Image (cartoon, rainbow, N blue to C red; front, side, top):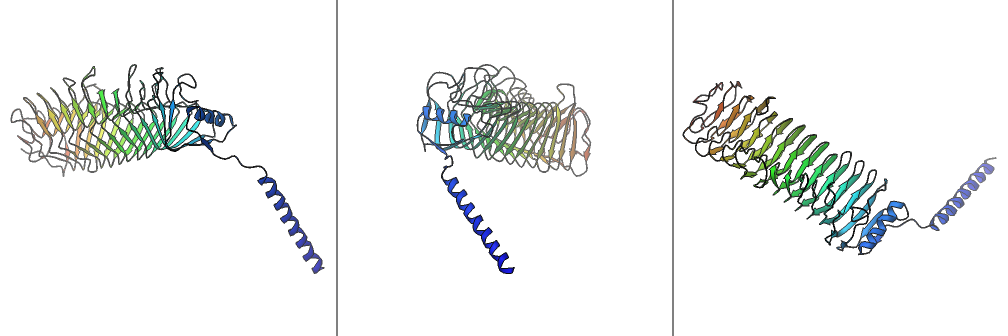
Length: 463
């Protein structure tokens, strides 16, 4: 009996081996689909995308290394290449190739349709210019579409909403180790020089550089959510508001990002403001960041917010430096920060330092608070310094903080070493409503005075 059971086990084992061998042989007889290597022509690329969309070809497209795919005609309506419709997703491995519009005809390069998904790696997308007013000069991500880019460059494109990229409501846009640069809006709403964001937008180690728009030179967040992790928003320009980042609404978290050397320049139709950041509504947090060297220049009376302009919503600064920003113009306001609506929290070493107002009758070199819209404005400064700011020009004062009908609280704060012309005073803090400070705050070495000749009291401030 024991021998019989052993023999049976051996027979079952041999049978299993035979079946496994047959299955392997059958599988090897039907080769698996291989990634598609795309020849260096626009026709090859169009064919590969169409085949992938239809399921007739593999969805992984390997472009010819360093090839320039010159797109000379629209494949569909306003799109140079066929819209991406495959829900499972198409992957384009660029191998440092470039997709570029090279004719006068108007179209964007990439359109990710509703329900479609595109992943792009090591790719440049250049010189898109759609004819329609939908925007997305180089790339348009539709409602329900997803675009994921790694080491992608989007540059030299034009469109009225999002000259570089537009992510529409319900879209998902993710960029990692990428660059959006030298894009410019024209006509229409002309906003969002680099990116116009309405869906879910995530940028990691990504640079937004040298883009231009009427509003929102670098990024315009209209609604939805924006997450910026590290990277740079630099050298962008707007004619009116939001040189680097314009947050009209939605929510955002900016962590470890440098927002620097952005500009508001002549050419707008209103007083310019928010060269670095402008927040109009929504809830936004900037942490571990630097907002430096941004400038508002040449847009006339009441320009403001060299670093930041808050006109509504809630903005929280956490361990963020607002420094060396500038506003040039008569009655300039808020060299570092202009808060004329909403709630501003300046926390945990978010120092506002070395900012400048240059022009007659300017107020608030560090922070200017004004209840311009009658809806109330609240500023809380906690464990942070408003130091070494300056106002220059006849009739200028309050180099540290100017407050007109706002609710301001200082907790463990410093307003020190700020300087204004000798007359009128003060150089440190001017307020028309009493400010109560929590013990531990310091108001010293402001020129010509700390708080003397302020219409209302600042508790613990001694001249």
